[in-house]
Image (tube, rainbow, N blue to C red; front, side):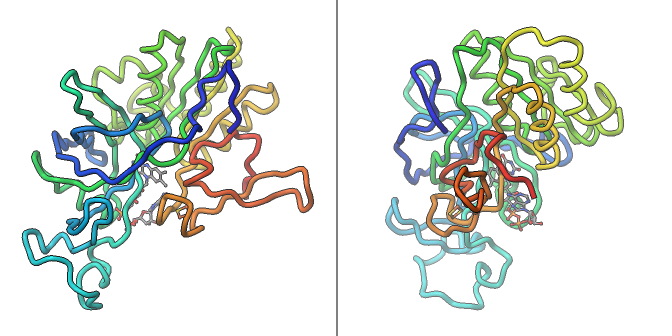
Length: 311
Ligand SMILES: Cc1cc2nc3c(=O)[nH]c(=O)nc-3n(C[C@H](O)[C@H](O)[C@H](O)COP(=O)(O)OP(=O)(O)OC[C@H]3O[C@@H](n4cnc5c(N)ncnc54)[C@H](O)[C@@H]3O)c2cc1C
Ligand code: FES
């Protein structure tokens, strides 16, 4: 994404590395989502929209090149040559790191860093994370990807999150609010019981639920469109993360009015660092054939909505 002196660019080169974090808390927020808080001695600067890759098993070996052994081998011998009967190759324990967006960051007076991850248990990796207890070590790689860009020229920031996409929007809304920026924030979930917000956060967001069990009934992009119809109050930039149909709907609402819209595309990822080419995403170009591939992990996950080709 481009940057100017009037823009807070989240795309400049930054340090990243492998870190051993300690679980500070890991609590359910609702029946489907947990909030993991990781503490570590230090961590490079981060921006909302960036993510970390979590090794969902135990790492041994050099700190910067951890070797995977299965979660079932806690306290076991050092890494062994690959044995195809081991759990990680038999599919019960994930071999690849799993990407999770940052849902918050706190720099503590003692110099330590706390990172929040809001996650949903969907498979082996996220299940492994849900079983971590206070004091457990977790090996993370990050920060990865490019975050959202914010503009001094756009006094109002509209933040829209759906489902597990709510995590990065909490981080963005909190960062913008603490920088005294005007923020209008919307979140959507299937129902009240699937809304991953604390009671305090619920007061900050305009809430929609598909079944009407909390807040306005309907989809979060509909609430955004209705708010927009009631009167555009200021120059604004819109930021969204959630299911792709929701993000496309938000993009379609913004486009006719020329409203800037940035979307965090949480595509399936393997390496998370631009190596495996596994997260290609089509973007528009002026040159024939009119499109090219970018990498969601390295060039994104945040993209300007106008450059995306939806399929
Ligand atoms: C940049 C990025 C940020 C993300 N941030 C978050 C986050 O903050 N919180 C969160 O809960 N999840 C987030 N995800 C999704 C998360 O990475 C996956 O849910 C996780 O990798 C699943 O691992 P697993 O081993 O538990 O499940 P697996 O066994 O690997 O998969 C279980 C099911 O989830 C589906 N799945 C896996 N990855 C994705 C994906 N990226 N998008 C849609 N479906 C997927 C699989 O197709 C499968 O059906 C993010 C993904 C990306 C790429
Ligand atoms: S996940 Fe490997 S290149 Fe993007």
